[in-house]
Length: 198
Image (cartoon, rainbow, N blue to C red; front, side, top):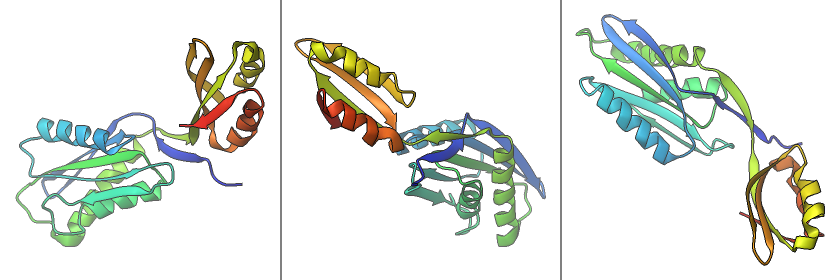
């Protein structure tokens, strides 16, 4: 059976770590797309506009097919990658971690930085509530009014969520369904109406 669930965090959370007077403030956010990533980054950069570095990593998509790491001026590979490593170690997606660094006047060196960013990211994830979500697909079914009862019976399935319902000359229902249950419901709906994937 293929996997149709993924892990993410339930809500934004914070963590912090200090090393040789440098402060590392970590923020984790649930995100659905790159636009939300940009909004959260802008928000944190404004909040900590006096900080020297705003390093981050994120993973997007139920299959974790989009990710990015950013060292934001720190030596290459010392910030974004260790943060990304913590996301991978918790098997998370649709999650952004930003670590803000306030320099304390003492250089930490490459391994010191890697450890500090890794630890700050780990700290923030320790305070996160990790949840499992299902991968859902969205469909639209169009049918005649006479088929309403048959369609509504199928819509009562525990894996179906009705998103929108319209009635004019025909009836249309847009719904989401857990991926692994989709074939069963869609096959049944095709007997009573026109179904297409959105």
